[in-house]
Amino acid sequence: MTREAGIATWLTSRWFIVPAVFSAVTLGWLAYVSAHDNGLIDGRVVDAKGDPVAGATVQLFERGFVTHEQRGRAVTDAEGRFRFTDNRSHSIQLEAEAPGLGRTDRRILRLWFAAQDAVLPEPLRFPTAP
Amino acid sequence: MAARPSRPRLLLRHATLVAVSFVMLLPFYWVMKTAVTNENIYAYPPGIVPRDPHLFNFVDVWYLIPFPRYLLNSIVVSAIAVAGNVVLNAMAGYALTRQFPGRRAVLALFLSCMLIPFQATIIPAYLITAKMGLLNTYFGLAFPMLSTIICIFVFKAAFEAVPRSLIDAARLDGLSEWRIILRVLLPLSKPAIATNVILSFIWSWNNFLWPLLITRDPTMQTLPLGLARFLSYMEDTTGALYAFAVLVLAPSVLVFLMAQKEFIRGLTSGATKG
Image 1 (cartoon, one colour):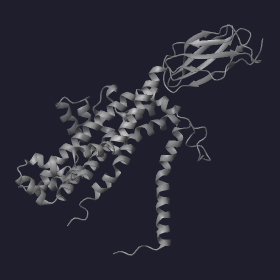
Image 2 (cartoon, one colour; image 1 turned 90 degrees about the vertical axis):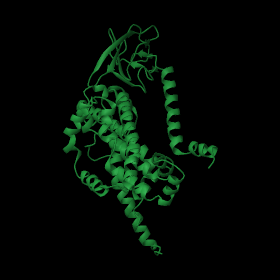
Image 3 (tube, helix red, strand yellow; image 1 turned 120 degrees about the vertical axis):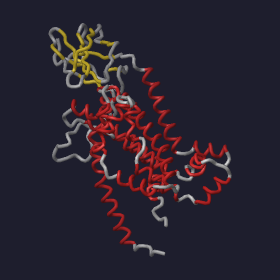
Image 4 (cartoon, one colour; image 1 turned 180 degrees about the vertical axis):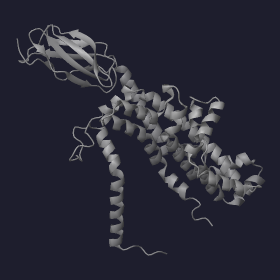
């Protein structure tokens, strides 16, 4: 067997292909993670009628082993939008509170990696309207 | 030449094999199912199909404990053990194919040593490792796994299957004993190498007791120790615990699947000799 044929055999063997594919997928995933791990969490807060709630306080709870600990607060703008810029966790809970409206249910948001940029798919909804 | 079995007999044989495979694979399926759900494994009646499967339990495992560190430690220790087994066992296996005074006694000693469980020699092994200053090091973690007697005999059987005339011809051509192993015997013993790689990798990867004894620093712990630590935190049967088990299991299964053909050939080489 010539040297070239030997190299070709090695390159087409599963001992090369499987680790190469695995390494390529891992590198691709790491590149994606590094481009999307800014810790940005965006969302909206609405009342029972679906109208935006301005000035509501949104709390971010980070998952520990057995409990969730409060790690950040944000206040909604006139359109009911809020943003967290420093989430470092992969699993969080969000809860909004506003005077006269009480509290929303805690919303669990599970991420694919720590500090993943994410948008809350459904707004946090108060059970009552003003 | 043996007669081909009749069709009903063939069907019965395959049905039996399928049934046995099902029984053997069922626990793996259960672990996988629990890993992608949060179902309680003691729930009755048990659900066969996973409900609302997701992969977030694997994400939890990755971040709730220093999983990447444990993974790195296990990979490094297993790599050292595999390298040690292939090199040292090939040398020992070749030596046992040669004639020298006391060869039969050495063989008998090796075979009798296989009967002694590692737990019986673990205190001397610990003391020797400590005297060498290898506690809490990667090399110390791999140290007792660097050479295993079963794998030496796998190499010995493979080397004995190589025609003696080939080795004599290599010697006449001026090859040293080292080069005979490297250039002649090892290229002809790929199944034995695969067997050594798989067995030493799996034994090292799954080793629990030895790393538990010699690691002092949590950052030097391997995956089985991490699993025990994780279990102590997550005492209920959550999906994350099973996701951890799957992540520990996956590399061993991958290595086995990649080398299974050579592995089976390596285990049976020499079986029809004589």
